[in-house]
Amino acid sequence: MTTIVNYGAGNLRSVQNTLDELDVSYRVTSQAAQVEKAEKIILPGVGHFGQMMQALDDLGLRDALAGKIHTGTPFLGICVGLQCLFEGSEESPGVSGLGVLRGEVKRFEGPVRVPHMGWNSLTKLRSSKLLLGIDGEAFTYFAHSFYAPVVEETAAICTYSQACSAVIEQGNLHAVQFHPEKSGLVGLLVLRNFIEL
Image 1 (cartoon, rainbow, N blue to C red):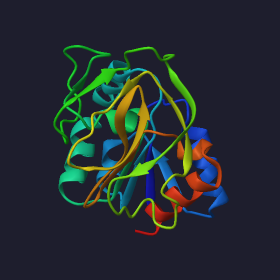
Image 2 (image 1 turned 135 degrees about the vertical axis):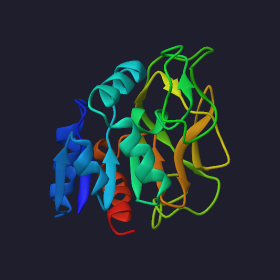
Image 3 (image 1 turned 60 degrees about the horizontal axis):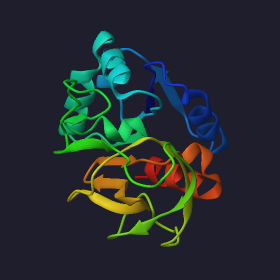
């Protein structure tokens, strides 16, 4: 069964609604013991990097999530759920992320409005199980002020003053910076592709 991690993220209900639309069985939990039993994990995320990591620590979820990722359980991080996979973020200096991926999340700079909010196109860098059946220039919905760098694990980028990771995929590890639950048919397909892995 798919497990949605509830650490208090504001987009939890919309993720549930999308899975309901896909007729997917799932459980919602904030308990590490339930996460450790999960067959698939979705970590929704909105808001502040430091607050998210503090909530995960308070609930004892940091080690459970990192352990499940390292042992091969399919994982999907959404928005800040992608950013927390890195070592840290400029949003919260001194706060450690899960450290599954190397690098630091940065704040957008340059002559662009921050936050980056609205529809933006994806550019595939390589084949992706999450993007199976999705056109190379599909549009998805973003809402973020900080961005993840392009790394070896990046499968697709979006460009907003600079290129940033929009889809990360390696083995069992999957994450998207955009909100699939707000991205219409493309978002539905992304979530369905993850569920059907």
